[in-house]
Length: 188
Image (cartoon, rainbow, N blue to C red; front, side):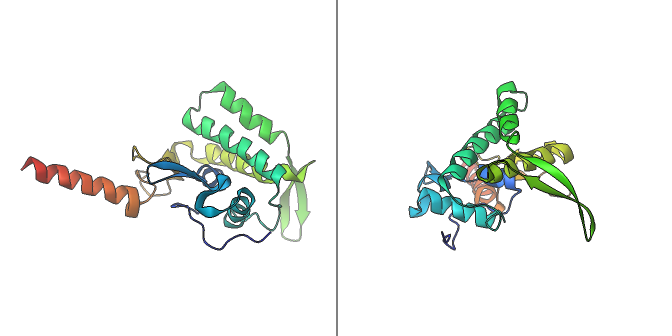
């Protein structure tokens, strides 16, 4: 299956786990879902497009089983990000992680690692869950939801001072600034 070349999502390029969360976004006041026919794509075309954008298309197939497992991972990660103290969310993430493992290897460049899966259709889901663990290990406080009340997107704050608030200054940040400006001018 060949993925379409244009990704309809407003925010791409985040770490794999957050990029998976961002397969759902707001469009015209309603949730759009890359895996549920957004932008006229079939579910598998949306999956193929996501795999391509996440750099996973050369390792994993866009098939129905992978989609089901990826939807499970998306729900698990979304719940864990929303409430890190949720035991059920942690259990869901763990259940995804049970489907793969890291195998230590020796490469021409030195020590390495390779992910292994009993069922390769779990590969994309496991990779996203594993990436989430990596974000938690390095900078859990930098995993953020956009500050806009009407936005559902998430990002990894890589700003130097760690104060990024918006998924995008061009979209949500600009709307917030314009709204504040409008409120100030109405007060005068």
